[in-house]
Image 1: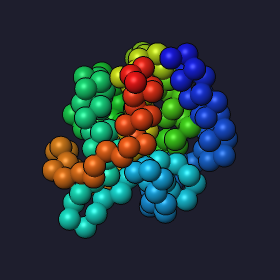
Image 2: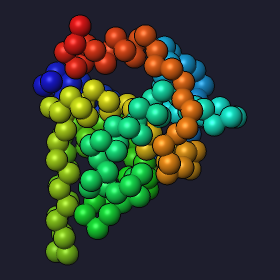
Image 3: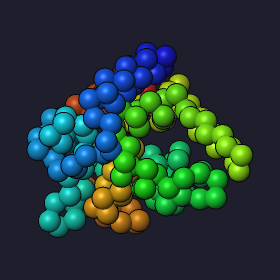
Image 4: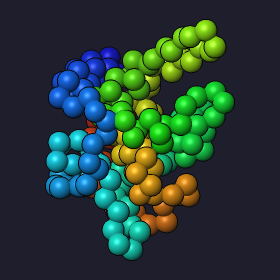
Length: 170
């Protein structure tokens, strides 16, 4: 798992340096093995006219509600305990997102102290960072609503292989 943290942080510094102005245009311009990418090469969502979402958006919804909603509220809407990630992803780029999730963040001022724990060693988060980013990016752009997506694309073989490898399964 330490390798995941190092890779995430390396990616964060490279991607973050390239584009620090927010999540950018989320339009999918290409697809690789079931993962949609924007013009910058960052993971993004793809929603078909009938409402079918890509696998990463669907998986991100599931992972968010498994690991993140306790602090960040239902569907990225925030809580009194942690900020609305739906809003954060309007200005946070992919590299910064990876860095914060992997390494955590501490914001302290005279009024409050907010601490985001590091999840780089938690495979239930680290193995699904792209999924979480894609789902929250879709929420930030109001591309998906608060409810569980009713229809989704199938999980690709490449996704299954990467997931099994990350989780230590064969």
